[in-house]
Image (cartoon, rainbow, N blue to C red; front, side, top):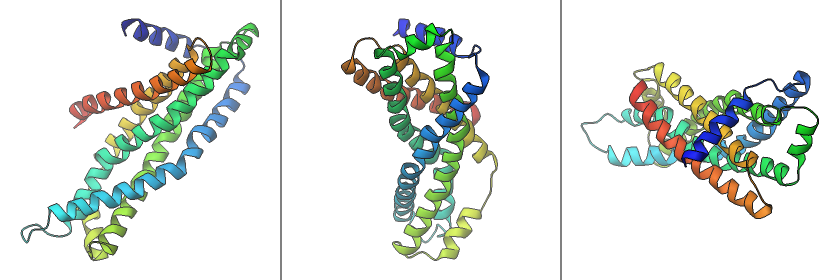
Length: 243
């Protein structure tokens, strides 16, 4: 594990060096934004709607008391979704989708000697292949989290009104109650850290794979598992530091 961590930081040192052809590099960034970000919108939206609906139902069931105003369900749903559910749950979902994609793509390039061919051309393959993925994730993942928050709140509203028979006014009033702008800053800060870990750790396992197709599959599994662990640990640390 210590050896892997050392190799990870040595690779990052190469990643943040000049890639060479800047025009080609920024074209690569745009391609990664499409493949890693835009393709994730349907999955993020679907998961968020059902997570928002489920948390609203759970809150209303457990807060069914004459001493608790009904609008507090909307308030609690907003806090839970913005602070934890959207950035953390969607971060883990993206670790599975984006992480496996990055690791398998780079692993396939490694075992088919495409990365070696880039090195022969005199380019910094680590920077050219990995840095666009990191930039794309850190640019687009906050947009995905904002979309996740909106769709999760919409799913919560639909569940509250359609299933639990709340009034639309009560739920929306709860959403608007006691606004705290730092909640959104906190969610975006966590998202940026998660995006860096997902892209860099997955790239490391794909870029350094050795062997054939079987090893590429193992590297993809390791990328998802270790990205998820990094997300969980950094979530704990950032919660303690920022909150």
